[in-house]
Amino acid sequence: MPKKKTVKKAASRKTAKKVTAPEFLVDLLNARSPTGHEYEAQAVVDRHVESKVDAYRRDTMGNRFATVNPEGDPSVLFAGHIDELGLIVTFISDEGFLYFDTLGGHDKTMISGRRVSILTKDGEIKGVTGKRAIHLMSAEDRKKVPETHEIWIDIGVSSRAEAEKLVRIGDPAIYDQSFELIRGSVGVARAFDDKAGAYAVLEAVRRLTQGKLNARVTAAATTQEEIGTRGAITAGYSENPDFAIAVDVGHATDSPDCDQRKYGRTKQGGGPIVCRGPNINPVVFDRIIACAEKNKIPYQLEADPRPTGTDARAIQVAQSGIATGLLSIPLRYMHTPSEMVDLKDIEHTVQLLEAFARSLKKGERGIW
Image 1: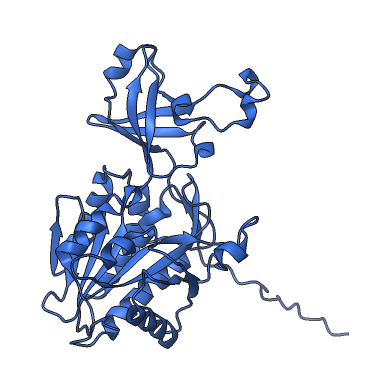
Image 2 (image 1 turned 90 degrees about the vertical axis):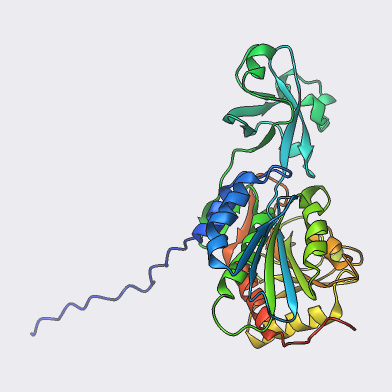
C-alpha cells in the first residue's frame, strides 16, 4: 500500500498587519499643551510642518499657520486646535498642598486620584490629585461629587516654603497619561480632543504640496479653543478666507447608555462626521458630501441647531462672514484622561480635506 503524502495545511488565518500611528500624530498627542500654555504642541507643529510648506507664520495668540500655493484662488482655511484640558495652580497651603482651578470643561468625577505633571519654568513636577479617602466619609458625603476646592495636588512636600521652591501660582498641569494603541487602529490618549483635528488639517496641507491645486490653502493650529474658541477668533480675522473647514472631535454615540434619539447615530470607525445646521454654509456642506462620495470616503451626518462648540462658530462670523464647514472625528469618552479614537477616522478626515481643497476652481465662492 503506497504511503500517503503529508500535506501541510496553509494557515487559515492571515497574520494581522501591525498598525502604527504616524509619528507626527503621536508627537502631537504626547505634547503637553493645556489651554493658554501650548508651547510643546507649537514646537511639534514647527518641527513637522514649517519646512514642508510655502509659507509659515506665528501670531500673538500662539496660533500656527501653514500655507501652500499662496497665490492661489479661492482661499481656504482649515482649523484644528492644539490646546487641551488642564489645571492651573491657584493656592498653596501651609502644608504644601496645591489647590487649583480647571482649564476647560472637566468632569469633576474624573479629577481625583490622577497622576499629574505640573509644567514649571524649571521643568515638570510630578504630583497626584487627592481628596479625602472614602473610608473617612459619611454615607452622605460619599454620594457627592467633590468641588474643585475640595481636591488638591500632592507633590510629596511638607511645607509651603518647600512647595514654593518648585511651583508657582499660575503653573499649569495635565494628566500624566500618554497615547497608546489598544487594539488594531483604535487608540486612547489624554488629548485626542483636539490633537486629532489639528493633525488632520496640518497633514492635509502637507499632502497638498504635491499635485494640482488651484486654491490657496492654509492650515491653522489654533489655541485656547477650550475656553472660548479664542485662537480661532483671531485666525478668522487675520486669514479672512473664502472658505473654511474646522476639524474637531465629535461624540461617537455607539457606546452604552447614550440615547441616540437625543444625540444622533454616529459610530467609531464610521468616518468623519459632517455637520449640518446654521453654523454650516450650505455650499461648503454640499461640496464636502460630493467629495466624500466621489472619492468613496466614508462619512456620517449630524445636525446641530445652533452655533457649534467648535472653532467653526468663531470663523463663520469673522470679518464679513466666511463660508464655513465642520468635520468631527468620532470619539468616545470626551474630556476624560482616556479619550478613544479609531485612527482610520483620522486618516479619512485627512483624505476628505485634501479632496475638498483639490475640488475648488478659481473664482468659486460660498455665496448662496
